[in-house]
View 1 (cartoon, rainbow, N blue to C red):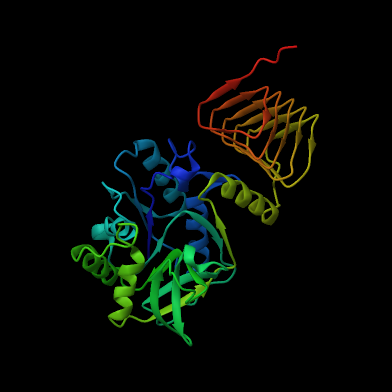
View 2 (tube, rainbow, N blue to C red):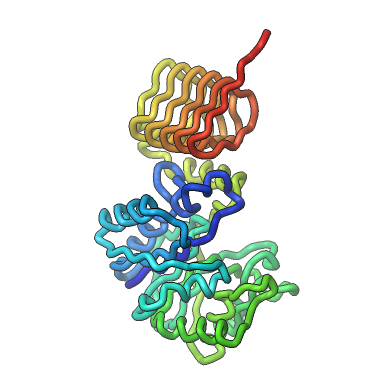
Length: 337
């Protein structure tokens, strides 16, 4: 079983935090988005993935490969790192997995978090698309049904033909068949309305060729694609995962849970929470912080922050505001009387 994870995108909507760290490697309550995805599928599939195929951008450095390799080694998965040299769409991104598109596997775009409570029954489906019912299907690709049968996949329909949104996760019984669909779309220059090659169109090609499609509903679907969405999703995860929240050190402080305090993190003389994630090695002192994220090794002191994201190794001193500061930044405002 392969896990195909296209992650070459630049994550522009979560900048500056994606300048250095790809969006799927951003942490949510102490664990990266991609690690959460791997663990979910290891738990709910009939057999766990044994190969992780991470499609990276051309400028992703060795540190990113090292992080993904460590993640895979901890789970007994063999990592592979094909490269997407140019961003030409979701179908093109998956196609860049190349020789790894054989056998069965799961294709998952790591823009969102999702929850699956029970083991997935794959049955005899050639493709299982994971879906979530939404109020506005025009924002998503959708699965169109005739009774129980999936008859069509449509990317961002103008008409309300289905409210089953495709969330970017697909089980594929034979990845070589998907590759054939991708090759057809690219070879015939079948671009979507945005001028890119869409995986939805490649999958629809397989559907029209006679492959059997089914869908499976996820229990929760949480967006991580923008800063407000990342903050909201972190809050929801903190509500759901309330065990073992305080792993770091808390001194002379008031904590309004849910608040995650990661290993080696320190909170001193502060009021923190609710819905705050203080990642590994971060410090918060002499401050009031709520509805915010302080990434690993970040520092907040003499500040009042709300709806804020502080990057890795960033330092905030004397701030009263909502703030979004990237990795290794430093903001120090002198207060004058």
